[in-house]
Image 1 (cartoon, rainbow, N blue to C red):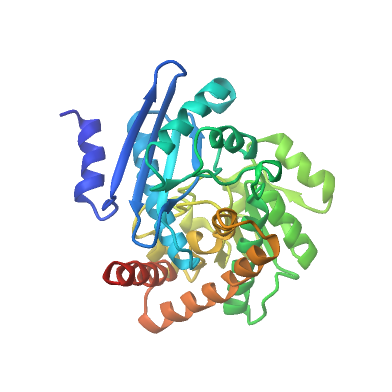
Image 2: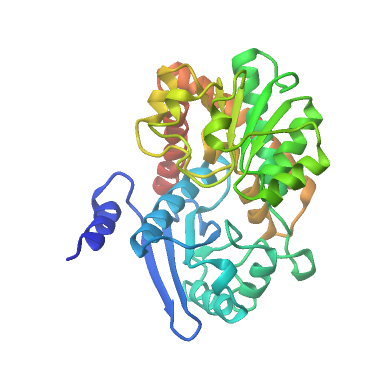
Length: 360
């Protein structure tokens, strides 16, 4: 057994981060498709989660990402009150180079072969147009365009939900559910981040942004010239007077290097799996930094795509996403009551809901 295989199997079968029901390795040589579909739990219903298209450095990295992301979806869906378990898929490769209609159709057939145990949607590297293609081979596809019976871009409600979580964080720390007069740093202003910036500007916040893509930065600054730009994430998190840090790019943003130099009092962003490893949540708490668990505040998108399965209604979804404010406050209260970090409190609440479903 190779070290790579052993590492994946250890995570899947023997680590606390495992416990997945099913992991499917998918390949279609004709189109070049290489994908991983991970189903963490179906205790609350069919697993629901997006498809990430990304040029992973190795197959092991892709599998581990699918395992982590799918587990996070179980917790996210549970706390969002959805009748869905957690799943996630990753397609290996640079979408700018290898994404084709034929590849997406092959992927759709792979998802369809699971018979509804996994429902897919958009994620990093996949878009509404891609889901329209996947749906031609798989009816268990959400995040489609309105023209094809879908709800369209889920980034809108994802950003709205993060904003609600940020308002709750402000209420908990400063006693007022507004970001007016606060300085908020947004790392990553792509699909979700640029919508979040709009909410923050409208609320009266001072906003500082950074992104590896110059065009993403320019889109924001052209619309909101008052927004400041930091050279990179390292400069952003060290910004003097920063009140809130919002990681909105890829995961692992909070680690042993970033936490000690964070100037913000609150971390609340859209990125999945922001904690690089177990223990980071304790490091944040010890520094007096309030962490709003990512899978709680970024649930607006999954609320939207779940609703699509029952006949999409935007106002109904927005009402559900507004409740992220109350859920976030409840997690902070539970954390204080139990003397644990908010991330641990959120886990406990989600795990209890899944356990109750198993017993029902």
